[in-house]
Image (cartoon, rainbow, N blue to C red; front, side, top):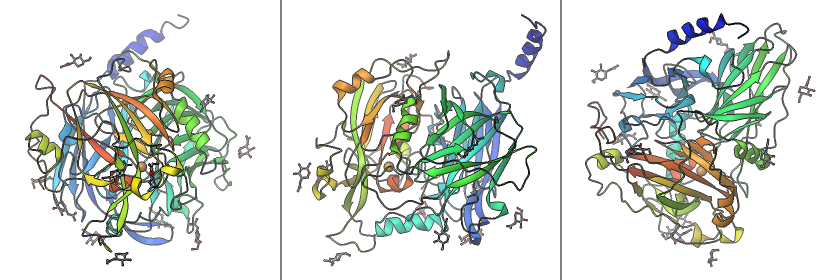
Length: 570
Ligand SMILES: *[C@@H]1O[C@H](CO)[C@@H](O)[C@H](O)[C@H]1NC(C)=O
Ligand SMILES: *[C@@H]1O[C@H](CO)[C@@H](O)[C@H](O)[C@H]1NC(C)=O
Ligand SMILES: *[C@@H]1O[C@H](CO)[C@@H](O)[C@H](O)[C@H]1NC(C)=O
Ligand SMILES: *[C@@H]1O[C@H](CO)[C@@H](O)[C@H](O)[C@H]1NC(C)=O
Ligand SMILES: *[C@@H]1O[C@H](CO)[C@@H](O)[C@H](O)[C@H]1NC(C)=O
Ligand SMILES: *[C@@H]1O[C@H](CO)[C@@H](O)[C@H](O)[C@H]1NC(C)=O
Ligand SMILES: *[C@@H]1O[C@H](CO)[C@@H](O)[C@H](O)[C@H]1NC(C)=O
Ligand SMILES: *[C@@H]1O[C@H](CO)[C@@H](O)[C@H](O)[C@H]1NC(C)=O
Ligand SMILES: *[C@@H]1O[C@H](CO)[C@@H](O)[C@H](O)[C@H]1NC(C)=O
Ligand SMILES: *[C@@H]1O[C@H](CO)[C@@H](O)[C@H](O)[C@H]1NC(C)=O
Ligand SMILES: *[C@@H]1O[C@H](CO)[C@@H](O)[C@H](O)[C@H]1NC(C)=O
Ligand SMILES: [Cu+2]
């Protein structure tokens, strides 16, 4: 009450900014872009509107987003709006052959959806082949009444979107084809990027290869960090600065203080940072977290960087590089992932306390028979494969799964027998379980059918087949609550006592601890076909996925609507 004149002023601002839901419309021209990167002067990549990363979509909670995809590229294309619930708009979700046939070269498709009941940082990316390596961008959802409504202790004065990525000195579509044809994993990335640029620590790094942004001393900045890398979880630091994490996957978190952010492919982290260091230049750095035990194919152990430049600093001053965690630092990764909790706010969902179904699902690598069209394929060759509950997922070829669901003609497209438990109970994380018999898996397109509004509790159990690894599991169509996570084989009797049923973090992608497990819960309040898969493209491609088929509810609003007129056909 010391300054009562602020009240009417604040009210006016509030009324003016509680805008009606708007339509945020973009045209995304997907096509060839020739860029100079690392030591190549003219690599042709596939990109949206000639930009890498692609355009940022900015909306307010409740807005409708309309994106016209026009495909000038030589490849089949689809776009996915990562983390958007798509309630009532399942035809706009985007994974190729799950919710739509691809948009062919020369064709177009309009994605229409709303961003209701979600605030924070999401993103969009291609959901076909490995094309999301260069077809990606941010999707920022502010509160309906604007930035003043952030539920943070101190409001940011500026925002900065930081998208981590991977860069190949190769055509990523061809990489995916070769990986399939040879049955071998694709080569690792040549560089890590921040907002499309690799930074100062690579060969041929030049003036145009480092992303820079400026701040005023003592400014409060909201960093919207997105991991768009194909296959690599990242450690993220800014030299001489620390963060207060306030959100993850567009769900607010209890403020969490840390000097390192850990972020798996598919995840986002919103972090407040105060520019409280001496006027100067500081590196913003992203280095890999390699969770594979034993170590798999080598990853690139390089560091992608950007530069944080204080206004008033000498432009030629050498920036300070932060010490990064070792690339095998599972302890730091687990500490970050396991310490996040939700910020409980009125109007946002809380964890469901009753459960209708339980699933126990093993996830991991293996081998399967080669396909006749693969190179070197004969009766005695197996190729790398991956699976959930020993079912290795393959996409259908003739029609999308959502079309088959809508017409109720699943025959020849998918089967409703995805198992609730693994077919064989074994010591999932023991080295001794890793033998040829256990590694063997077979291909199928299985779904788990759920009735509208049922609550699912799922244990995700990593295996030691081929290798233990922290698989970032992403669920389309829903957020889930993370009740608990740990290492080794899941033991319900001890884990249940550790369930957080008060303020568990809400996410769309969980990095299941390497050689460990995580327990998640979600409410199937969204009819449609919802892909759940590893967000390492290398693993998804090998079959680490499954689909939830959620049946219609009792009303038109709770049923899959008829497909849009321009839905691509196969
Ligand atoms: C795009 O680049 C590919 C090579 O990657 C080329 O074959 C194709 O003709 C190009 N398309 C256009 C429209 O320039
Ligand atoms: C999309 O395709 C339709 C039909 O081919 C065409 O009428 C329309 O102009 C196209 N839109 C854009 C933005 O290219
Ligand atoms: C730079 O090039 C050399 C020679 O090709 C290579 O050995 C080295 O790994 C490269 N460094 C980076 C960071 O890519
Ligand atoms: C840097 O980019 C600018 C414009 O984007 C371009 O004109 C210039 O040639 C580039 N310089 C180098 C060294 O690539
Ligand atoms: C900044 O960070 C560097 C690298 O960790 C460290 O050597 C230096 O002492 C720090 N400076 C200040 C003022 O904290
Ligand atoms: C985070 O989690 C670890 C266990 O992994 C625990 O030891 C630590 O005290 C927790 N708290 C913080 C603030 O990191
Ligand atoms: C099958 O392929 C493997 C590996 O390419 C080769 O060593 C083997 O001789 C082949 N066997 C037959 C029966 O063709
Ligand atoms: C493979 O591992 C499983 C589980 O540990 C074990 O039951 C089985 O006997 C092993 N088979 C072979 C051939 O070693
Ligand atoms: C998976 O199923 C195959 C049969 O299709 C079997 O040979 C293999 O041992 C099973 N592996 C596991 C881990 O259940
Ligand atoms: C679904 O659950 C919500 C929340 O519990 C409830 O409001 C709604 O009535 C339910 N709908 C149906 C059809 O069960
Ligand atoms: C593109 O998608 C169509 C199905 O819509 C498929 O028939 C065709 O083989 C695909 N093309 C490529 C190059 O994958
Ligand atoms: Cu994986």
